[in-house]
Image (cartoon, rainbow over all chains, first blue to last red; front, side):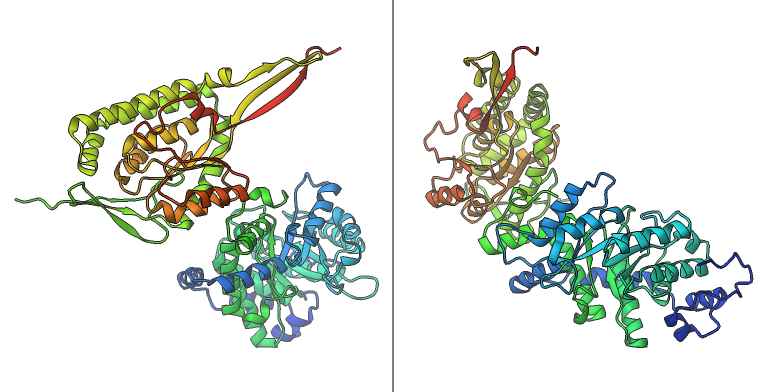
Amino acid sequence: MTLTSPDRSGQSPLAPASRAIDIIGADLTEASLTRYLRGLPAVDAVGLTNRAADLGSRSIKATSKAWALDKIISLIDLTTLEGADTPGKVRSLVAKALTPDASDLTSPRVAAVCVYGDMVATAAEALGSAKGEHAPGGINVAAVATAFPSGRASLRVKLADVADAVDAGADEIDMVIDRGAFLAGNYGRVFDEIVAVKAACQRADKSFAHLKVILETGELNTYDNVKRASWLAILAGGDFIKTSTGKVAPAATLPVTLLMLQVVRDWHRLTGERIGVKPAGGIRTSKDAIKYLVAVAEVAGQEWLEPHLFRFGASSLLNDVLLQRQKISTGHYSASSYVTID
Amino acid sequence: MTRLAIPKTYKLFIGGKFPRSESGRVFEIRSAKGEFLANAAKASRKDARDAVVAARAAGSGWAGATGYNRGQVLYRVAEVLEGRRDQFIAEIVSTEGVSAAAAAAQVDEAVDRWVWYAGWADKYVQVAGNANAVSGPFFNISVPEPTGVVAIVVPQDSSLLGITSAIAPALVSGNTVVVIASERFPLSSIGLAEVLATSDLPGGVVNILTGSPAEIAPWLASHADVNALDLIGAAGLDWIDLEIAAAETLQRVMRPEQGPDIASPSLTRITQFTETKTVWHTKSLI
């Protein structure tokens, strides 16, 4: 796969992506893509933040809260993305994904574990027969790839990174976009990379690993950019749009997630196709997570509250949810010493 | 020209800040003669929960400070309290209805107790710890360590001296505390919170809740993140139920005390909220 050479006229064709061709037209070029993205209606920032604050102030009653806590757990991508990750740490992460609360086996399992590409095999082996969303009580293995978190590597290296993770058994690939190219207005380059990564997600049996596209909204500076990047990622073939790597502050915020939910809602109205959203980083408490559930249900619709359409990228969130569950089941406040250390 | 009076609305003291009650409730503080003095926040179980979180977060820093440093901080509390002596005397006179001389004696005694306990901070380990004799070439050393988060129902019939006598000894060893103030005389407790906030005490080491002990204490007694429960001022509550609830989460419990000399200063008040750690170390390495 070769990239579009820097072409000032923007007239050279982009990689053929069926969604983009359907929406923008067969003469898909950087110029036509840029024209389309720049033509998107601007975001009303004040209205967006007010709407997010309003959705975050809903009163959640006890029975709804119990439902919400279990739902949150089932939507978590339990994540460890540290330079200090060891096979042992990944195995303990998988153990926690399988049995979140050893003192209460009624707790649902999380949706996926999210690790670096070289840990995929370890995670897959630890999951055993519980690996994959089609297994009963199954848990996916998600891998971050494409020179996560910065994305500063050549396309060749990025694609090798993706292929490695897919070969090792990753069910989902979390890629980062080239924010530098995006901010420089080089939308075609970002687009072609996503298309290429999508192609690299194909397994030997022709099936595809799910592709989550990380926009790193904390580096995109404006809501308009977030909106353009969301459309770009969807047009290029992303199955999920994800806010952040978790390595850059600010990570996921409610207004940004709300905006991305509006984009997937609009995409659904336009094409009938449902795209997933994954806020990641900075969501640490049940209270915050419930605000996101409210936003999903109100903006995209309740059918989005399923693991194939909405995820939380989080590590410490799970423990807080478990403490809240214990409070509900025992009637008294619990303590962090009653849940496992990550 | 007449001046419009500014009655104060007091708030809680959690994590070094003065928040209103999450519940939005207040109750009236009245003088001994029944006149309205001020509104105070009426804490809810969620305020108690937040206070425990703040106390837990402050724990490692306070327990990790040297005894010498903790002693300095507690002495500073005495200094700042002394500087606001007149305010406390006036408040005690109006709320308890006692003479100015009796109120002054109470404030002086409270200041003295802060100083007395401050002095113990770098000394109690030498008294309560021990080098144990063992049958082998080992040093065997027992040292007291703080229990952790201590919930305290302070003496209910005393303004300033009761809360001082109940919280100061727990702080000496490095515990952090969640305090339920006197329901009858909360004014001095909130006044003390303002003293603590302007001393060098790190935020969250002392958290003071005003309101109904009968309402809040059960939530603290059953809270799994509270390590000890001091029921010294809980004689008027169903304290046996509190003790049972505390047993469920393995809290160390101190029972109520009564009488004129309630919470008189002693080394036992310091050591009752410590846990003994014993370490072995070889006498020589070959």
